[in-house]
Length: 112
Length: 114
Image (tube, rainbow over all chains, first blue to last red):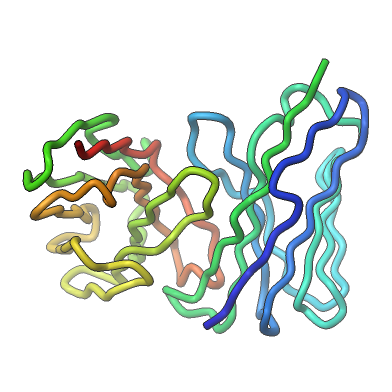
């Protein structure tokens, strides 16, 4: 079945440093979604990427979808303490109701 | 709109006990899902429903049952609780299929089986 690998598992940064998490799929994706989960909270949808090579920005967050639609990345510029949490990618293979596979997430820990 | 509401927030069960995790949404979404999240892991799909009266198994359905009698409600039933079912359970809903639509999650139920 489809596998979605996400690295790194943990990332410690000093406040103000940049952060990047990477997502790789074993199969070509129809689209990819990104979620953020604060400690003790629930996942919250951030964005969906659909097109090959797509790049989208949300303030300090930049999301990219690879040309082959098998990988994606999330980059945060100048991290702030409010960025703490776990970032998950979720790859869709066919658009079906059960067609979303989550990566294990990257835990972002920020040291003031 | 309250969105997706889950109850209870926390529960401790003894091995062999049963319970129902409640989930209701007020967004008129046809699609609803149950995920479990184990420490350090991503989300695993237990069951899903594409509409009232229709349910289907996800990746890890063993030990669970669901029903969908209304659009709003999608309860998850654990019949004989086992320690392996200790986890955080999230209910979610979408307007369209999850592969194309953002998931709206509830706040989760933290279940411990001892």
